[in-house]
Each structure stands twice: as structure tokens, then as C-alpha cells.
Amino acid sequence: MGVGQLPTTEFNDEELDEYPESHLGPVPRPGGEDMIQLLDAEGRRHDHPVFGAYAEALDAEKLRGFYRDMAVVRRFDQEATALQRQGQLALWVPLTGQEAAQIGSGHATLPEDFIFPTYREHGVALTRGMDLAQLLSLFRGVSHGGWDPREKNFNVYTLVLAAQVLHAVGYAMGIQRDRKAALARGEQPEDAAVVAYYGDGASSEGDVHESMVFAASYQAPVVFFCQNNHWAISVPTVTQTKVPLAHRAQGYGFPGIRVDGNDVLAVHAVTQWALDRARRGEGPVLIEAFTYRLGAHTTADDPTKYRPGSEEEQWRAKDPLTRLEAYLKAEGLADEAFFDDVARQGQELADHVRETVLALQAPTLEEAFQHVYAQAHPLVQEELRWYQEYEAGFVTEQQSAEG
Ligand SMILES: Cc1ncc(C[n+]2csc(CCOP(=O)(O)OP(=O)(O)O)c2C)c(N)n1
Ligand SMILES: [Mg+2]
Picture 1 (cartoon, rainbow, N blue to C red):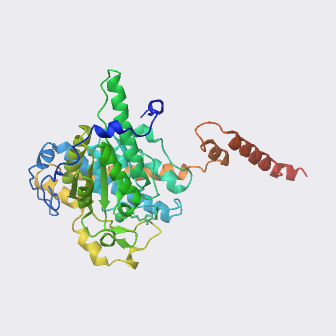
Picture 2: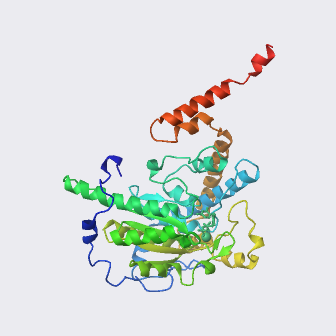
């Protein structure tokens, strides 16, 4: 969205009138089942009248690619955890267990789509072509962000729960307005959409409610992607909601789908369906990816304090990687050489990340002043000058040695 193209008025009643009935009809529930699954925990394929075709369209290379990305990002996660344990990162937020939810949904996006992640979407970052080493500058405390969101249409991580969901809807509404302006100029605009990632705990934030009301009212091209990993630190999802989170979409008037979040094929299919729909101008979809955080909330958390190990064991049996590996082997789509190569690529990424992180330097305080406002600001300039004079007032080691 170009800043120069921002509308002069924020909201316009005429725009609402463009969707007089569309959101009042019955809300479609494709399939209608409780949870969409195309690849079960044993690696067996299942068909589906709406989503099956999306999985059928994937060739062997694409399927191997899904496996490679899930395995590589899990290896990355281990390296980042080790770096934190060795004192090289202040904190790490592991994703292990959620690879299918992230790789499946991320691969359904197009480069022109815009992604608003939380703080755990390392797998999505990989699918966007991000250098994963960049993610770590925030966790090393040497950057307030770490990357330019516009390079890969991947916003900076947001640690204030659910704030990015509002940003995502605002961005999606911006796409609608840019589109209208482009059509008025006789241009053919890109049909882009937005994905807002958030967690089961964040779903309790008022920001999510407001986002969904606006998205429905304006039929904004946004997919709400909720990773229900069963825990919000030590609070279980059953405390946050008395109905499946996907059902909440009904109340806003758009489709809500619960998908097996450990099934990369189903997640990919459902997200592609939702994004296609959003790009066609048919409005938002809520996807609840039913998954599990196998590790700690962060490296500062100890899950043994609040959940039984047996629960983790139950979910380990539903591991997203093992089931795809079983499927690829059973179908003869991947051999041992492939899996060896994936392990090598994971190690290469881990080495690259470690090397890059150890070389990251803390910024000077002057740099912090540069990013307060987009343009130079007299008050900030004055404060910077004061700070520089203050720093210059200290005796240097050399002056001290010279007496
Ligand atoms: C507005 C706000 N309130 C509280 C917190 C503290 N906090 C950080 S993560 C978290 C739990 C989030 O759980 P969930 O949304 O399920 O995401 P998950 O961490 O499980 O991926 C909380 C309460 C915060 N970061 N922001
Ligand atoms: Mg959670």
C-alpha cells in the first residue's frame, strides 16, 4: 500500500453499501466436518470433496519440499534454543510441533500477499524466503525489529498479543482501496490478500474481536490463521473458549474451519482455499489450526510445572514430520538419499545461523535516535546532540594515560 494513496477519509458509508447482503446469507462450512484432515497420524491419505483437489494438485517435488522445510526449520529451532542456552540470545520462542501449520499455510501464500506474524512464525518466515538468521537479531537484543517488512511482505514480529491482527485487517482494507484506485486509473491491480497469525490465547484479546468485525463489515481480503497449540503459556485453550475457536467465525458472518494443524497437506489446502476466496473479493475466513506446542512457551518457561508429560507424549504421536515421512516412503516419493540431504541442509542452515548471530554487533545509541520518527524531528535531534555532548564529556583512556 503506497503511503501517497491513503484515503482522505478513513471510513466511507458508500463502501459499506457495496456489500448490502453478501454477509447476511448463510455462512458456508465447506465439508462441514469437525476437523479437516487429508493425512492422518499414520501417514494415510484421506480424500475430501472440497479440499482433496488441492492436495491432488501437489507433485512429488512439492511434497518433498514441504518435508524439507519442516525438517530444516525444526533444526533451526534447535540451534536457536542452543544459542539461547549458551547466552547468545536473550530469549527464544520455539516452534517445534507447529511445523505443518506454518509451512503448509506459508506455502499457500503468494509473494504479493502480506503476512502479519506473531513471534513464533519461523516456519512461515522460511516459506517467505527470509534469511532465518535475521530473525535472531531481535532475540539477541541488537534490533527493535530485525528486517524490512516490505522486502518479503513479512511484517516484523509482534510481541503485543493480537496487535498485529488489527494491523492485518487495516492493511487488507488498504489493499481494497488501492485496488479501487488502480481500477479507476484503468490499471489491472494484483489480487493480493493478507494473513494474520495469532494464537489461541491471543484470541481472547478484544483486538481480535474488533478486527473480525471490521473485516466482515468491509469484506476485507484477510485470512485469520489461529494456531491453537493448546496453551497460552500455562493457560489451556479450554479456559479461553467453550466452543471450538473456528466456530466463532459464524458469529461474525464468515467461514470458520478447523484443520488438523499437524497435517501439512490439509493446512496447505484450506489456506489456499481461503486465500483464493479472499483474493476474489469474497471476504475473510478464520482457520483454526489444531496443533500442539511440544516444547516450552519460551526458553524462560518450564512446562513441567503446569502440564503432564503424558499430554506431550500423546501429541508426539501426531508429529507432522513423521506422518509425511511415512507417506513419502510408502508412496516411493523419497529415498534415503533425500532424507540425508535434508539433514545436511538443516545442518548448513544451523551453521549459517550460528556464525551470523555470533557476528551481530550491538548498535550504537545514536542509531536508536534515527528510528524514532520517519523524518528528522527537532526534539529528537536536540536530545541526540545532548547525548553526544554528554558522551564527549568523559575522559578517554588515552587522555587519562597522558595525564
Ligand atoms: C497484550 C499482551 N498481554 C499479555 C502478554 C504476555 N504473553 C506473552 S505470550 C502469552 C501467551 C500467548 O498465547 P497464545 O496466543 O496461545 O500464543 P502461543 O504463545 O501459544 O503461540 C502471553 C499471555 C503479551 N505479550 N501481550
Ligand atoms: Mg497458544
